Image 1 (cartoon, rainbow, N blue to C red):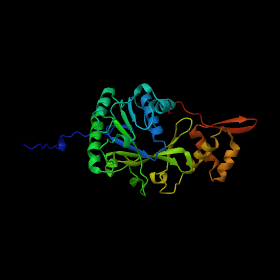
Image 2 (image 1 turned 90 degrees about the vertical axis):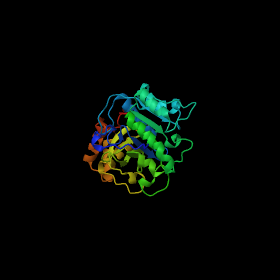
Image 3 (image 1 turned 120 degrees about the vertical axis):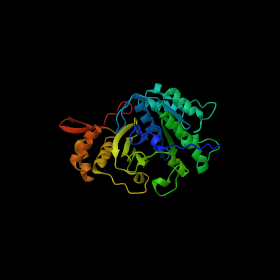
Image 4 (image 1 turned 45 degrees about the vertical axis):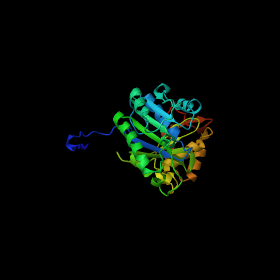
Length: 320
């Protein structure tokens, strides 16, 4: 007897896509966050984790109730790296769970993933990095081996409603962002959203998350963030994926130039406003633009001995 079963589309109820972070990370789907090693991918996803566990809004998004997160990492120690970073960004660590891999290594097709999501009601599952969770017999460059693995993980995401974010290191070849992928084209094809993280060419302390692929909504604006003594979101950026990866010359707006200048000049402490305005003028940035950038960054100015000084923006608590 045939196993054929046909679905009539008139019987399918249309539903709206739900979002953990619109339009970057959808619920019930696979998202890939990729970039070169050391570019800030882990710091960023842990900042996302922190805000989700505390019910705080992500940039350009609305807050949601606090939720559990499952975080799997094969590159960093839980006690000496991940826990301190979670505390640095202000996460509620009681809501961050890890599947114990001390006896059996986890893979993308492991049934423990579904069990953990269902048991914890997690809203976000993070696998960092992809290369460590493919499975011993899966070649990431072979489509016939990649497809069934990602199909199963995609089913788990859809059936549980959990957002799945896979962290990956990009290859070194290719000319455009779409070709610096993780392996087989089927990896990025399986994801509904692909995010690229990299350093801002002119300011390596500033990192950018750019939207490389978006199947479920218009691509979102690039998001800037700062790595230092603490993590801090800086707002949106006009930097594109190809600019970020060095394939096109970066063209920044005067506002972005002003913010970068302020953060750079205040990195070691207060600075006299007169000096800042003079430097801005030399770079073709108006005083009005500097003042607007100052306000958006939360920079305070204080008068001392008849001179005005700008002070570095206060480090936010947690991931704010």
